Length: 122
Image (spheres, one colour):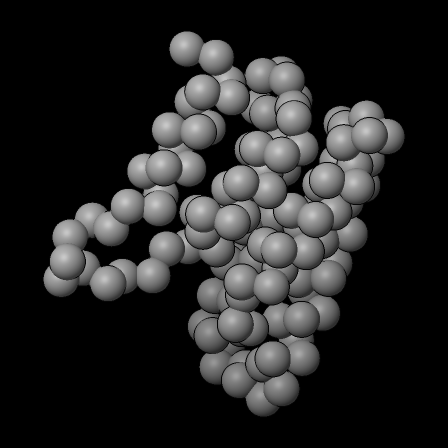
């Protein structure tokens, strides 16, 4: 099964509700429009593996930062602190993607990244 076909199936599956009673929100990276933006980048399978790794590193880092703030009961200015940590992680991911993607792919990655960032509440 080729990559485009697999992502198309994933996109369709992500758009389908699990059941009528299960109105659970999807994580930001699984929102149908975010998945479509990732597909639109047009990556090779080798690029896709690294792309997933970089996005996972970003998401893990963001979750770790949030957990650290919560664990320390550091809720004063939490929005500001999370935005700062997210920007730092985003810059790191941008650098990684700059090395990974071609000049034609990078603007499409920026669309993906901006859409992903718009999905976070904090």
